Image 1 (cartoon, rainbow over the protein chains, first blue to last red):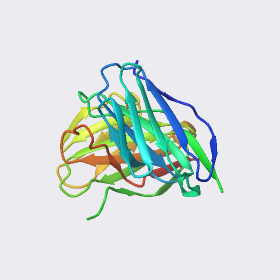
Image 2 (image 1 turned 90 degrees about the vertical axis):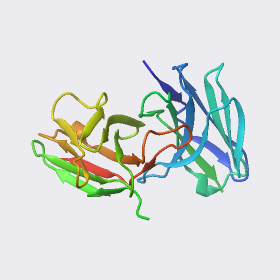
Image 3 (image 1 turned 60 degrees about the vertical axis):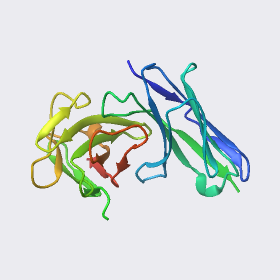
Length: 111
Length: 116
């Protein structure tokens, strides 16, 4: 059974700090990995994707992937109150068209 | 360029009624995906459709739920004889073809179904 797990949180960090969000997955055949941000009552929006081991940086966001450990993370530098949202990890094995989503981690950035 | 359009945004149904949720994909997109998000839970895949074809319905409940994507018009997710447990946000996404690594999805704004 394919599963994606995340700490539900809430994760609270002070403004300006680094927020670290973690995700583990069970399907070793997974090929691509996505982070979505979802504000309360809104639809998920894609932040980043990664499919190679290592780090990928985009502005204040860094995605980290370790396929051997089946672990993917998202770092948010210089956290802002506007980053307060639920962050969803999603995994795709490239053989199917559907993504498996984790339950999400709620992040709260305190001013 | 209009994004993925879903309507209605909010839908209230009494138990036993039918709910019809509509999704118009982005222009040029012929693949549609439906997901359901129960309160305080993550997104769960329901069904993947191409024009006039259901490709993968492995996430659809066996009874009361059906989906279509006709040659003309939006994709429809139909829930018959709704029950309170159907209350959720239903999101639709679209893609131009087979989703390649890195494409991800663009979701519509969702339909929030409340069964009373």
